[in-house]
Structure formats: C-alpha cells, structure tokens
Length: 263
Image (cartoon, one colour):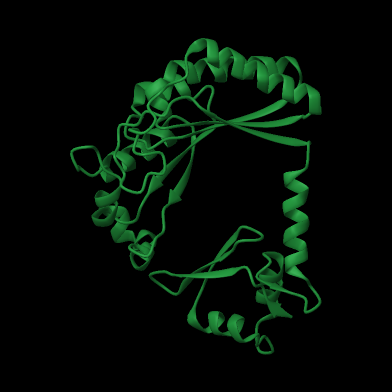
C-alpha cells in the first residue's frame, strides 16, 4: 500500500483536515496518522482504519497509477455527453470591490443581460441539449453579482426548468453569489428554482473584511454569514468557497474552530 499523491493536509484545531483531491474525500486525522501516511508505514494500523482509508482513496495499492486514473477521469468528464453544465453570466456588475477580482471589480465590464439576450441564451442551451441528447443538465447563474440582475436570472431559470420537465431532462440549478444582497424576500422568490448557492469566505472575519469589501472599504463578513443562514432557512443548500492565498493560508485553520464560528 502507498499514500495517494493527491492527499493534502490542512492544519486544524485538533490535528489535520485531510483532503484527497482526486476522490474529493475529507477526513480528519492526528499527527500519528499523518506521519504514517507520509512514510507509508501501515503495519501496526488498525485494519478498520486501513479499510476506511482505502475506501476514501487516501491509500492505494502499490500498482495503482494515479496519474493515469486522473487523466481517465478528466477525459471521461470533459468529453462525456451524458451530463452537461451551463454557466450563464447574467451581469458583470458587482456591488463589491474585492482587490483580487479578475473581472475588474465590476468596473472593466458593467453590462448586464437583457431579456432578449436571455431568450437567445435559453434557446442555445435547449438546442445543445437536444443535439447531444443529454439527460442531466446543471445550470449555474454567475456574474458579477447575479442578484443585480435577478429578474433575468429568474426568467432563465423558469424557462429552462419548464422546458427540461417537458423533455424529461433532469436539471440542477445553482447560483454563485457574494451573498450581500441575499435577503429573506429574495431567497423566498429564488428557492423554488434554485437548489443551492455558492458563497465565499476568505478566512476568519479579520482577514475576510480586508478582501471581500464594499467600495468604501467596509467588510462583508457579517452579511455573508447572514446570507448563509438565509439560504439554509429557505431550503437551499450552501457550497462554501474559501479563497486561499499566501496571505491567509496560515489563518484558514481558524475556520474549523468554534471560535471562528462565534465571531
């Protein structure tokens, strides 16, 4: 047996969070297990532990070529027509001014999709689905901040959901949002059409409030936490994204602690 080359250890309050990027499995381990995995010493390990580690791809057989396995999985997904994902940018406008924004903080591009463009977008997605005979579709609303063009986003969601149901196509729907505009009223309107939202934290509050900021420099941590609660209360799932950089990686472990959750 050998340790997977795709294992990543992240310091936590007690031990480490172990993330296998190939199998997308997350476990928590102590220093002893971390050392065993890094040195490939499993002789004294409980057989039940070994079974669990194998099941999650943390350890593999000596003969396993993980690079070939990765290439196979990548190509299988990249060229498969069984599933399809659409990412629709409904607006480039944004109400934040995050310094690392690759879209220019909503200043380089500020256009938003109108209803006629939305209709053409819906038709293009439908034609693509029919052409490839896809039975499973994922639709993601993106921006900018998509809540700044919510009506058009709803138009796309409503039309695609109705059409997919008529064609017996399974559709999953999500939105990537900074969360600051997600009120209870908006969540109530969106929740019948959205399965979940992706929201970003940049670390514990002191760091987050230096990067996820309004144009006046005010931080957004409290608003983001409220948005997470609002989304969950409305029945939508929440995928929490964390931006990791050389400036905040040493603080990421604080997100695992109860103190960070209480801030």
